Structures are given as structure tokens and as C-alpha cells.
Image 1 (cartoon, rainbow, N blue to C red):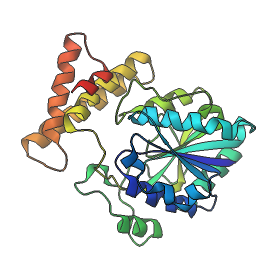
Image 2: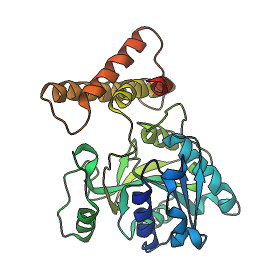
Image 3: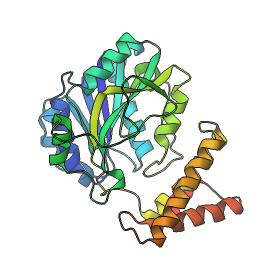
Length: 305
């Protein structure tokens, strides 16, 4: 199985450079890597990385937005995979602040080769800094991967392969049959919250999407480049409703997701927890509810906030 990688980055050129170092140390080095930024500063310094100078990776710029940038990456891979059987290659999407274990791509490729019914894979996240104040440091990421630090409790832990309804966007791989047929929904702008669930939900028409415990990694959860609290709060309501309406998310899942986040935003605002901009998120929640009541709710309205 030939491995390809797409990295959509925004405001994290340093983190992306480090990720390229991790990819160069994979036991199955990717056949090609596409890096997609939205402006020059997103990719500053990356042109000097050996993977770029040696032609194993290339850099593109597109309009800003996670879904847009990932689609540009997929389109850029088309000439690279044109002569390959779609069942014999896969593409992995890594967040720029994800740190894969050295055998991540090899493990994913072997799983896809051994199990033709599997079309999508996400891995075991040993530590996830997305919900912490300072995230996970690069040094601690190495310790988690080396086993010097015990893994944190995370929903992605499992002793064996587990069938899922949605994959975790910071580290997910799809067989070529999916990657050639599907694109990310660009109606989910900017940070594209729940774009991973939407894409993997649609991918299930081609086979199973699973959690693969041997694909281990660490998500640093770097805060730079992320959406503002108000915008993210708006997306917490608008995106699940949009996906439920289009059928890639059940109304039950959407309701559970929205209520969970709304309650968390209220509680953390009242208790003045400052890990994230919870007052901003709550404000965004209310703005989305107002738009819902007036029939104007649309994920794209986040661009006007």
C-alpha cells in the first residue's frame, strides 16, 4: 500500500516543519506529502525542508479553511495516483500539531492491505492537548511515544480494532477508493468543526471506518491558528444542525453534541475557567440559536462574525 499525506496548516509553520521530520522517520516513508497553507506565513521556512527540496513533498497555497485546504491537497494528489489502483494506496490527513509514532503509516497500510472491508482508519491518541490550557509540549510528545510517560485517558484507546461512526480529524487515513470519490464539505468553513465526522460518515458507504490501536500518536493541541471563541461557539450549534439536515449525522448525535457543549460553556463561564474562551463560545452558541429561530442558521455565517 502506497502512503500519501495531506497537511492543511494555518499559522503553524514551525509545527508543520516538525511534523515533516516525523514523516521522514516513518518506517513506511510516504510516497508524497502535500502541504497546503492559506498565505505565505503559514508555510514560512518549509521550502528548505529536505522532503521539499528533494521532491518528496510540495507546498501549495489556497483560500483559508480546513475543508478547502484538504480538498486542494486531495486534488493535488490526483496526478500522483492516476496510474495506481485505488485499492492499493491511501491518504492520511494529519493536523500540523499531530505527532505520529514511527510505524503509524506502516500500521495503517498493513491494516488496509489485510482487511479489504476497511476504508478509513483513525489511531490511538496517547495524549490530547486540545482541551488543556497549554497543550502537550514537543518534549512530552516524545516521552509519550517512547513510553516514558503513561498514556492519558482518551476515547481512542482500545485493545483491538473497533468499528466507529466517525474518525478523529487530527489523524485519519482513507483508502484511495474513498479519497478519489469524496471531498470535504466546504460549507463547514474555517476550522471546519465536525468535518471529520461528516467525511467519515459518508466514507462508510464504501466500507468500515475503524479505530486502529497500533496507529499511535500525540495531538499537541496548539492553540495558535484556531478559530475565535465566538466563531467556534457558533459552529458548535450550526455545524451539527447542518450535518443532521444533510443526513451525515443523526439528529440524536447532533442534539447530544450541542447540549454537551452548551452546558460545558455555561458551566465553565460561570466558574471562570480560563483554559479556553468559554464566554466567547457561549456567546457564539446564543448567536447560532438566534439564527436558528429566525431561519437564518448557516455554518457559513461564521465568516461574518
